[in-house]
Amino acid sequence: MTARELVVNLLYKIEVGEAYSNTTLDKELNKSDLSREDKALASQIFYGVLTWKLTIDEIIKQYSNIRLKKISPWILNILRIAIYQIVWLDKIPVSAAVNESVNLAKKYGHPASVSFTNAILRKVSKDELDKLFTYLQKKILTEDEIIAITTSHPQWLVAELLKEYDIKFVTELLDANNQIPETTLRVNTLKTTVDEVKKLLDLKRIDCKKGNLPDSIIAKKINEFDTPLYVVQDEAAQLACIMLAPKEGELVLDACSAPGGKTTYLAQLMNNKGEIDAWDIHEHRVKLVEETAKRLGVEIISVKVNDATIYDTYCFEKYDKILLDVPCSGIGVIRKKPEIKWTRKEEDIPELVKIQAQILDNGARYLKRGGTLIYSTCTVLKQENEEQIQKFLSNHKDFELVEEKKLYPHIDNTDGFYIAKLARR
Image (tube, rainbow, N blue to C red; front, top):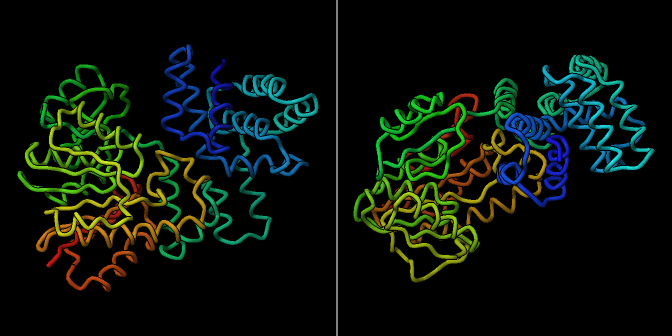
């Protein structure tokens, strides 16, 4: 299987809801016998198409007399990978992109779809984006429609963000979502130091630098992750743990713990002394927490399959500190998981807000008086963040907001993230 055929198969799996971008790509590349160069090409095309899908589809619309919904998903993805290569990748010859896509159409389509693919791609040129912008200027479009097409984000999301932020802020945020981020590592100080890991990476000629937080390192390209010395963890997620400030000997709850990055960082901040209860609703995800803890040498975590939306009377006023990194829309991590743009729907948000409120209400009852609770999300939508906390505080007079942080990719070079530090009086 060639690099391009592998990408077409992965895009199809994501489109029908069978896979997630980051885990699926890594798994398939590890199984394949592609060369290092072809694996890099596959990764570039895969993430490129997921990032620019809406813009690419607008290009297809200009040349197709068939509506997108009527085109076979296999042929549509074959067109997408070819157009991405032609328009966005300078080093790929147009003939190579077109010829291989036509060959793929022969394998995954029928004679008419082969002719259709060939006819479309013969019309596409390197200056397609300029032509698209000229085309858009002639159409009567709303502001959110134009931003959606030019930044390749769903219109509902653009419209929602424009309710909350000005147009300059929104376009800069969405542009940042389309950039490939560097990899942020959190050093496991139970095993080593930041300086030692930095030296190790330097010896391996990995371009890296110390991050903005005590235990973070930012690396350009890195492929070694199965190590007890560090984990991949964004600085925004690290900051949520730092703001909770768990101490040695305390009893801590991480109610939505999988895959375990924050849970193990809490243990690290506690010097592996004390006790952490780690919950998650899915058994296979709880096992991820166990595996992460074992790899890092963390011994104070007790994992449990548990639904944080259901109140447990046994936990009433049990915990000194609580972390609630609640299920959310994931809008803040689009630059790492671009398929979120296409899989997340506007109608999902009210249900997520309801779940978040249930978890927050239960967490409030689990916290000891005088204790600290962190509510965090990886989204920038106010209804999941500030508005959620305002509603909570109006219903829980024994709590106060101590500190509030909101991070953005285009400002902080982190995931889009929200952190509210609450104290129970």
